[in-house]
Length: 189
Image 1 (cartoon, helix red, strand yellow):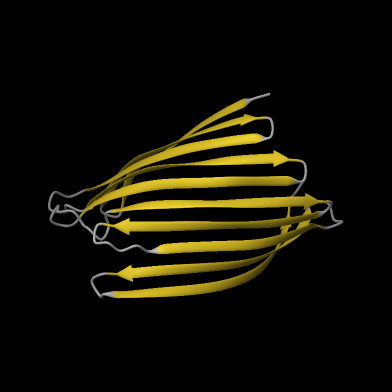
Image 2 (cartoon, rainbow, N blue to C red):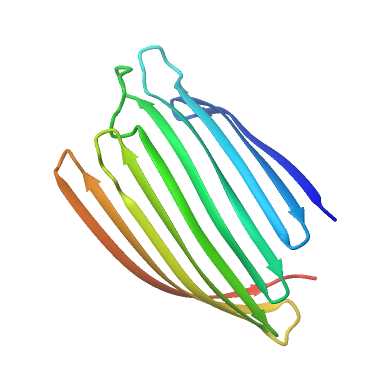
């Protein structure tokens, strides 16, 4: 039986010297083994004081298509956002005015008490001064449900690559990181 879910998150108030007003609506439509998720966000940060002209307006949206069938859960995800930033003088802050796009995928395969997961994500940002930082992540995970009800052990190996550009310094940097972690998880029944 199809299902529909709607959620609206909001933000209103002060943070530091900025007033914030924003909304994040999300819709989830499920039919059979398929979940479709779409969401958007708009956020406006304005100065509290007249002599401060720093402000940011950002908006974007994203979605996920997920398939859940016996022994397999997999999904494709994508999102896009834009931010307009003004500096202390009220002029466009070219380094902080940008477009960003992200996309990725994951899959989990369940067999008995074992779950094997794999996934990857990529993000690219381009600002008005031409900088194009990127971030790439990939992971491989294994989870074991132990004989103790509610207790599982999960091991995750990850790789991340960040490419940063700074046009003012005329420099670029790339950072690679590998990680490994083990987590014990107990769910109370």
